[in-house]
Every structure is written in C-alpha cells, then in structure tokens.
Length: 412
Image (cartoon, rainbow, N blue to C red; front, side, top):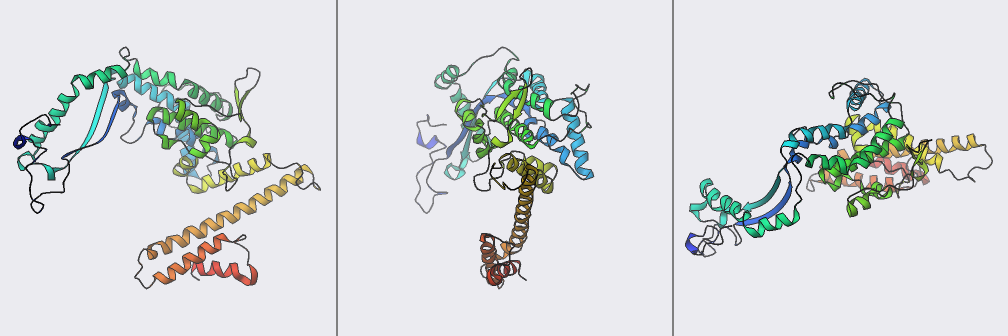
C-alpha cells in the first residue's frame, strides 16, 4: 500500500536485505490481500443477534413439524413457534427490520481484508501508530483514486433514500407468496389472524400436515435464506436439484420448481405436491428432506426419525407397483408393504445404534496406535464394518458368521 514511495530505506514493506541467518522471517510480502466484498450496509440490520438472520433460524420449519412433538418440552416449543408464526411470518419480520434501521443506513460499503506479516516489516513500523498511518490511511487514500471510484460507479446502481431494503421484498415476492399459500392451506389450524404484537409467544399448534408440505416449506425457507445471505450451503444440493430449484437459483438467481408442484382448487391457488414425484435418495430410496437439521435441533433426533419414517411409508405407498402381491386386496397389499417398511426401518435403526455406540468406544483408541488397547479396538472396528456389509445384519448367518461379527464388534 505504500509502494509509491521511492526511497528504499523509508519503505516499511521493503526492509533492507539481510543474510538468511539474520532475516526475521521467511521471504515474502508484508501485506498479503486475503478477500474483499462490496455490499449495502443495510445487510447489518437483517440480524436479530450476532449470529443469525431471522430467515436463518428455521422458524417455519420448526413450527411445521411441531405437530409430531410427543413430550411436554417438544409440545411447549411447538406452541411457542406456532405463536410466532401466527404473529408474523419470518419474511414479514425481516422486512420490518430492514425498513426500520436498515432504511436509514443503506450506503455502499467496500470491505478489503489483508494480512500483515510483521516479520517483513522494519522494526520502527511494528507498532499501531505506524501501521495506521502507513497502511490503513494509505489504503483509504488509494480507494478514493479514480481507478477505484470509476469502477464502482460503473457497476453500482443508485436508489432513492430508504428504497434499497424493499428490493429484498420485491425480489423474494414469488417465494414468500408461495410460502404463505402453502402455510395457509396445509399447515395452520385455523385462518391466520395478524396479532397486535409480533412478539407473541404462544399459539395453536397447526394440524399435522402431509410430510411433502413440510419439506416444501423447508425448501422455500432455505431459498429465502439464500436470497438474504447468498450462502449456497443453505441449499441441500441433491434435494434442491431434484425439485429444480438448485440449478435455477445458481444460474439465474431465481428459483424454478418442478412438475411435482401444481395449483388446484376453483381459483387455482391451492398448492399441491404429488408425493410420488418427491425426489428420493439414490442409494436408500428414501425421500430426501430439508427439515432434518431444524427438527433435530428443535425437537431432537427421535422426533425426526419418527417423522422421516412416516414420510418414507407414504412415499412407498404412493409408488407401490400395481402388480405387487396380486393375490391380495388393495388393503392387504398396503399392509404388507407397511410391514416390510417397518421391519426395514427397525433394522436400519438397530444398525445405526450399534454403529454409533461401537464407534464412540473405539474411535479414541484407534487414535493411539501405540497403546495396548489399539489391536483390540482395530479388530472391533473391522468386525463392525464387515457386519454392516452383510445382507441381513440381524440374521445369525451361515454357521453363526453374522452373529460372531456382531459379537466381536460390540466387544462381548
């Protein structure tokens, strides 16, 4: 940043050459550019805390999955979230925030991040005063020069005072309109009324919706998250690409939804999702979900497992081949399929339980190769992997082979 200085002895970033044995650090630059970003300062008004935006908290997803809560704590959480949604949707809350403080502070902010390597600075420049005068002020002056200012002018769009925050509401209107339509027709217990205060803490838990509408809400909430934060990690890739939203968002900036979503009713305004067209995991053939993280954080892992199993059952029933078990009635075929799914889920849950417990015991021991317990821990780990790879892990196996692997894995 002070490279315009011509005299070598006065240049803080180019100290005099020293022999290798006397250099304070490895050869390199004293100032290393790391990253830069340019944004509107109203973005700071989107946060309700230092960590999260309103649209990052999964409020709607948590409220939508509340009807599956079984214990007192879960039901209380579901009631609290239902009250918040009854008062105002997350997108309504963040719009209010932006039109408040965000409407007053909406200037352009150019932010550059550098790393200063003190090893490559002369001794007299290794203090706060010198760094401020020779680096910070120099950089500020450089940013005011025509090459920088002209480039910003060519690429910036000016809005009237307090107009910029509304851009978010305008750009996300299709998403928020669909969120409201899905919620009003498939989630809420009664017609939604705007409460006098957006801080309502209790509400009537919505009726238990079909899982595909929970997942649609979760997907739309993640799309809204992406609109405000630009964080692509908020979009579960496999599911978002399955419903066409992922590719369209990243390529055009706007979501597009697949043929599984349609609008029905006399007015053509009721969102409808065909569960038999919901994307499946290519390996497990289970329905892909976007609500897992929100459910496990809000209500716990067992809550999500029960919900996901129900979704799996409904998905399998909707895809049941017409020629499956022709000797049985439709009800009999459905019951057989549900029984098969229940057994499969029981086996999967049992394998997960054993895996998690065994790994919790052997993982610390596997990190200590020189310990006396290492050989036994490694043998348990190998037995666990072999047992999980068997076709029927809860079967005894030929001559008890599967049972022996399980016994070795649990360390019995």
